[in-house]
Length: 367
Image 1: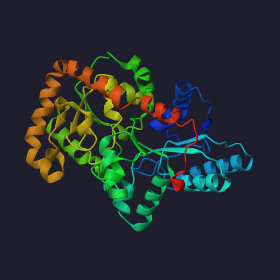
Image 2: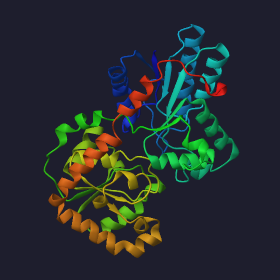
Image 3: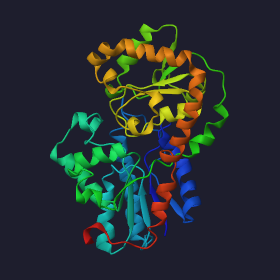
Image 4: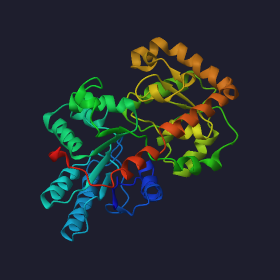
């Protein structure tokens, strides 16, 4: 079996660049199989403002990947039992990959890592396009092309199932399917990468490490900053930081704050936890299953601006209490970090799932 990684374009300020470097090595180490990366052009891409990717550039990148895959089929390089791993499952080229494999009679396996889509009302697709038939049908088709649909959290699985497939966990078609797996994301490299930043001197600094997008509710963060000027409040994306500068900032901060309305995993608060920054996150979205109770606040406190104003005194008190008593939270933070390392930011389950597909399986159309 050869594992082909159909990657997501590497953006300097995103984990996608780290994935291009680390994921091939990790996959090869854990599966003992040859790994080939199928990457698009190397030119630096800037993201569409507030978005994760560039809405035009991402299609150019994916088209280049498809051309490479088609050429490999033409040259008979793709063999029965080969595995294609899409690191962003929202990639329409998977339909063309399935088309080529089935019409040419090559029994491959395909897995995809789902990050977001129109089924999330706070995602760009959800906000701007919503449940338009074309996008929901496209997502359902891509889902059906994958032999394994991978998710990082149970929250994301439930949202996807209800929005795309009209399933719930209690419905037999969803609960018995073997195409959906919660595996966490293959980011174990972060623990090593951030080791040198641990143990730095802390200042009364609170970070907003998120994208500058409406679902992140930056206005709440700025209002809290005005209410508590005794602390340093930093919006990371206002400063055009390199990865090293960003990690230096995390390392001296005492808190990472979130009022997010969209989160299917959450990497920045994990990075912060690794270097001793206390997370303060709402009890909703993926945070509910991931965060210790000591680091969650009631969802209603920041559900919208009006709810925030009604509960602002409680949130202010909570922040001051955590900053003042920072050291007493460190033992809990250590336990939190261990849980995140094991259950959400390790690729072990993903590698095992891929290794188990060494024998060709029936394609979805044959099941």
